[in-house]
Image (tube, rainbow over all chains, first blue to last red; front, side):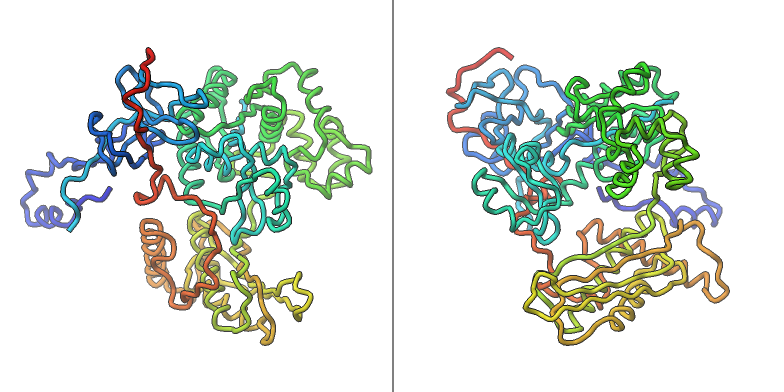
Amino acid sequence: MMRPDTSGPREAHLEAAGFPSPAADYRDTGISLDRALIDHPEATFFFRAAGADLEETGIFDGDLLVVDRSLTPGPGHLVVAVSDGEFVIKRAGALAESASGEVTIWGVVRWTIHRLCPSP
Amino acid sequence: MPIALIDCNNFYASCEQLFQPALLGRPVVVLSNNDGCVVARSAEARALGIPMGAPWHTLKELARRHAVVALSSNYALYGDLSDRVMRILSRFSPCQEVYSIDECFLDLGGAQPNPAACGRLIHREIRRLTGITVGVGLGATKTLAKFANHCAKKRPEFAGVCPLFEMPSREADRLLAWAPVGEIWGVGRRLTARLEKQGIVTALDLKRAAPSRIRAAFSVTLERTVRELNGEACLGLMAGPGTRKQILSSRSFGALISALAPLEEAVAAYATRAGEKLRRQQLLAGSIGVFLRTNPFREDLPQNQGSLTLPLPPTDDTRLLAQTALRALRAVYRPGFAYQKAGVCLTDLVPADRRQGDLFVDAAQEKKSRSLMAAMDAINRAMGSGTVKLLAEGNDPRRAMRARLRSPRYTTRLDELPVARTEPSAAEQRTLPP
């Protein structure tokens, strides 16, 4: 994730001039959405949501899903599951059997990222 | 101090099946660059007897009969999943040697009080976190760990994890007696034939051979293998029976090429790829070779092939590599032939930290070259291979890799993500307790 680079020459310059920056002690690492949204980088994968009637779940057509394979789904969690060879979004606890009788959980949907304003 | 060798099962095919669950249980093959030969098979394709390396066009009939799915190599996907697997494995030990895209050695001595339990945990965790199934072999030496891994995969009683190091020696020997000598790390086909002539047929025969006799009749390398089979560690992490001595970048062209100019572009591009590999491994090349050949199966066309190796001051500068490669190409090129394949081979590799001082090399100039190459690699990594390239590489679609059957780059491109749907009937489906 890219962040504006706030380190470096500016403060060195100040110090050279005899005024150590008071902000130096408080400098933080900045905000990274990667760090905020992804707890287990090795087990986290992104999916694209598709379908018309997802609104009751808070997921809309075209949303970006952050899916974590390391979590154990609890009741009410949304999961990406495999049913008849396809990825489907389901609520854990409502995992009905598919035609071939088998549904396996692929990962838990941790976040959905929904675009409100299209890129210019 | 047990060493673990962890190896992903049918890695490329498993990556494809992970993101295309419809392929689970079906015979899947992955094809080499230009969709030429089979480079990976799912267990089902293996069971059909499709051999590794078989040219795809010879398999079309079999493929139709058994509905074999053929895919182009998707290296972006395999590389990303490999990185995930390797990062998880690195948590189990401070000593890790990534041996290839789907294999790695871990030293489990010290860090893990119960290595066999640790092996089983690795097997479970990699599967849970990445969806990839691995085999784990635990042995007292690297050679034995490799062999244990073979047992873990081929013998169902181990369920994917073979703790050879803690088995009673009689049982371990029984496994060695079961395996042909060719299954031992570093024993290739030609060596196997020579060993068999001397009555060394199984892995156990090799273990029991006198090291001095093996050294006299074969080599120091094979003697080391015998010692390793007897539990005497001769190979540290990062060492193998033969260390890496060359970097190769070559490819068949999408169409035959006769003119020099497009060949120059191709060779400059291969030199660039080879340079990237070289810098990634922090090595310098002491010489560079170029080879060029026509299609040997086109008996109707005149045949030609040539190669030339030129020395270099040990370098990793793409500009110098490409320049020298082009000089070699111009020397081997003959007009009037339809060339099918060219390649660049870097040899005499030395670690970059052993860069020799050279009276005629300007240190400032060299530092500049290093930062230029680092910037080029960073941009190409972030924006996709080939974003920044040498002018000499050109842009010839005839050379563009044929990869018509490649699956989406599910894990590295936002516009190629896997799609998850809600079925229209989801709300009406009956609810089961969790």
